Each structure stands twice: as C-alpha cells, then as structure tokens.
Image 1: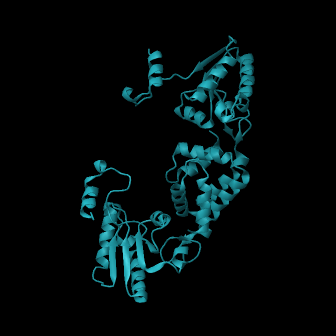
Image 2: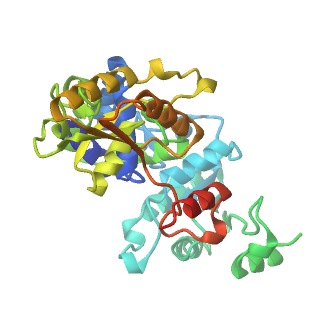
Image 3: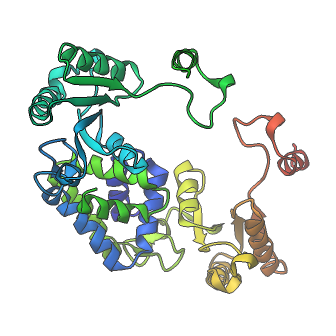
Length: 199
Length: 199
C-alpha cells in the first residue's frame, strides 16, 4: 500500500471509533474533496487547541474564558446539571430541555480504574455551589451521571456532600423504561426503577 | 456551542460514516492529543492530494505514476482481478491470497444511477488486457465485482466483451455461504448459488 495513504490512515485509526476499514474509507473520501476543503479541515485540526479551551466555570469546551452557556444571562444560575463528560452536556443541550447551567466532572468515581473524587472536578463543584448559594439563596443540583455503577457511586458521593445544607436541593435524573423499548426485554433493575417511580 | 468546535465537527460530519455524535467525540479526542500529533494529522490532510494520486495502470492509490503492486515484478501479469472500488482492492490485498494484478473500475454499471460502461474504466481495462495478451500470450480476468445487481450487470458486460477471444479466460468469484453464517438464515439466492456450486 502507498506510504502516504498508510500514514494518514494510521493517524486516523488512533481516534475513537475508527478502525482500519473506516480509516481507508475516510482517506479515499478526502482524496475526492477539493483542495480548499482539505486545507480548511487540516488547518482547523492544527489550530484546534489554540482556539478551543476549557470554560473555567463549567469545564465545557470554549473559545473564551467562559463558554457560551455560562455567559448566557438568560440561563438560570440557581440550577446546576452535573454530567460526567462534555458529550453528555452536548446531548442534554441538543434536547433543548435544560435552561440552567452545567458542571462537567470529567469522569466518574471508579475504584477499579483508580479514579477517586480528587481526580474529578468535585472541589470545583462545591466552590461553585457555595458561590451560587451566596448569590441566589438556594440552588438545585441535578445529578445526571450515567446509570452505571461508577455513575451511581459518583451521584451518591455528591448527594452526601450537600446532604446537610437545607438551601441545596439535590435531585437525580429519573430511571425507567426508555422510549421505544419493550417491557419484555427490560432488565430487572430497570423494571424495578420503573415500578418504584410509577405515577 | 463553541464556534471553533462546531466548525471542525461540521467539517468531520461531511465525511462518510461520521454522524453528529461521532464528530463531537472525535473533536474531544483531538483536544486530548499533544499538539505535535495535531500538526502531523493536519498537515497530512493538507498534503494528501499532493502526495497521493492514481496509479495510471490499475487506478489504485499511488505516490508515483505506478502503484507498488503494478511496480512489483513478482506479481503475475497474466492474471487481472477486476474490482469496483479501491476499498475492494484493499480487502483482497489484506487477505493476501491474490498474486496477480488489479484493475479498479471506479464503480459498477447501474442504469438507475445513470452509470453506464463509459463512466467506468472499462476502455482502460480492454487496452490493458490487449497489451497483456500481446506480452504474455494468455490472460485470466477474475471478475470480483459485488454480488449485487449492479455488480452482476458489470460482470456480465465485461464477460461479453472478451467472450470471443480464446486467449482470454474470464472467471467470476464463487458465490455461496459466507463463513460463520447459518444455513437457516441464508437467503434463497445465496442457497441457490451454494447448491449449484457444490463440490
């Protein structure tokens, strides 16, 4: 195989979700593009880290010190949705259902992977929450970590942190049957949650 | 969402097999890479078309006028495997079973999509085959177009082209049950082929 072709395919294969076939398909697709598009994509990749950094408030991606969501005065600063990863934030934001702010933890507590609370942005969360309480009087924290053992452990840990503060209300995303699924195929834990939260 | 982040995600989404979520995941993965890797990938994309072009013989990707396969003196020039796309060539080559040369048609005959023989590299194929016959006396053409209606139509068309030339033997990849599949789930046409080609 051609060395330049192989080199770019090998670089693409180091990215998540791209195997050898997908990499070859991508390089062939790029070969069909006008040079202007290759220049645009290539330069965007080279300049990416100069342009995109982390929001110093919520740890979303941002071009400025504060991301567009944290800068938006119409967002409710008394409601904070806590997620594990930036992609989680993007999914909630795409759904267009949340009008408060976010906090990206950068992962979930997982002793097996040696990830403890100090590896996550939990200290930054408590500092933000204290500041928000001082400014607004009361704050709601919505725990939107994943319904996995690591996500549940992280949710329990954060819930405990704020348990004795009456001005802070901590909630968790509801669990139950996902839309479009069948009761027949639901696992026991999901069914248990769906039954307990019935209304 | 951040405009630089959105821009690069939008560029990646124009590539085959990359949806909005995959694009966001890719940009976040790129943000975690050292700048040297971003420079390497970005420059490889920008320089791709300067470095990689088409082999003038078989239409594989190549850095030179002739690709590595056509330049390789150990490959048998009396056997030509005809494929629709470069990715097909790469799959056969990866399997390491073919020691002859290749010919990439650039697609398959499909009247619905207004693709006729003149849109494919069939004239180039006949010229190559004539040259090979002059040099070697006899040539085998293996038709490895897809087992789809377009691929079959293309195979029939090429078979007809060389039907009256005794020094040219035209064969077609065998059809039957794929390894790892179950007879129970095989479609009727596959079963028909598997039965007819039994040995």
